[in-house]
Length: 565
Image (cartoon, rainbow, N blue to C red; front, side, top):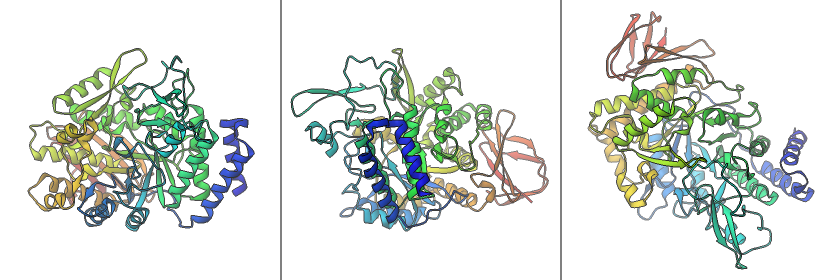
């Protein structure tokens, strides 16, 4: 087995690097892998099941005077969230300089204000952990970059220097910012360095064997610290060749295959999840052949399609897309979500909805208080690529009554929980958070609208107040999750059929291996919908009521989960 894996690792390295990766490089790499393998002894869960639900959160989501943030979060999690979530995705908790953690200063340390690796281990007692592997770029304040600027031997090729006259017009740009940023080196020379996301986020040069070895070392460290899921951040941009679009290149896929081979060797059961906020066709390419790349990919098209269905009160586009979903093997599944620390991506709608409908959705949400980020296109035009808003506020008009706001929110999350794959819920969603305009004004960027941090005890009082919106959202969603976690039909791999009843009613039929079947019905409209059902007897799991009629009435925005008797 070990020899086979080593042969695979050698083959992948040879494809990407050829002779530039020396025997000495290979010896160092394999020694690091062997050492990690001998340290990691804990067994990881094989595969996934209906009990697996991920909470997405910042490690410093809560603060208290005189305390590190992570222990404060762990207390809140154990009190309010541990019964609902099996996994916690800790967004980057390493020392950082910008982008709320994604400009990493030191991959191997925990941000001192957040806590220590001991605090991470303490949370691990209550939840399986998902770490961010921010592999495309790192902070301009990092030691690695300082060494590069100071021309320290061994760091000459850690970052990507490009002649500014080079034609880079074909490069896919996720942000409306300069692609190259000038920096002055110790000897006074100026280098124009590749900065895909910002001048504080310097792209790593994976063409350098030293960079690959350093980054594999980071990956191995996270596995040794007990990460069960690894999120590969912005991974599609990892390899650059001027003259190409510099996204989804074959070398990038081979590097992910390398990460997969290494993780399978030292920590079998670890799940790699690729984060590629791109059109669906490109997104699913990161499954590889179904066994050699990511076990999960982010289901990026789901959040905007559910939003579109709610606002148009029309489920046909959502159903057509969902019916087309295919997995390459039973060893892969979807990582489903509606909200995250980022905005709601629009690129994953392209190729599914006409551009006119995308722009119409953007305009409607803007009128209701959402903010929009734009990208530059190679032809000189610009397009909206992200809507910044809490998912709760995205679903409803400002003047909506709370009853309708809650109903739409629960409907959307019931779709999430009914979908094949593993669902993930952002902490602001289960806390029923609204748009944080003060945060946007204070911090100066749109994404702050959905990234509010709280003082210890601040949220608890609202969650305990049965008249508050937070209380209603939290309790309704918690109840929904509790039901899902007990039903085998909601296993990520169970058989799924998507149907519509007219334009307004979405139907998801899930069938477990043991034959148990749940029919999920969703009324995406402001009006009562009467539909015919072929279920003669069953139980509606959300309300806990028996079904004895084949004619069902769904109130506006109502969800039913019907389990057949």
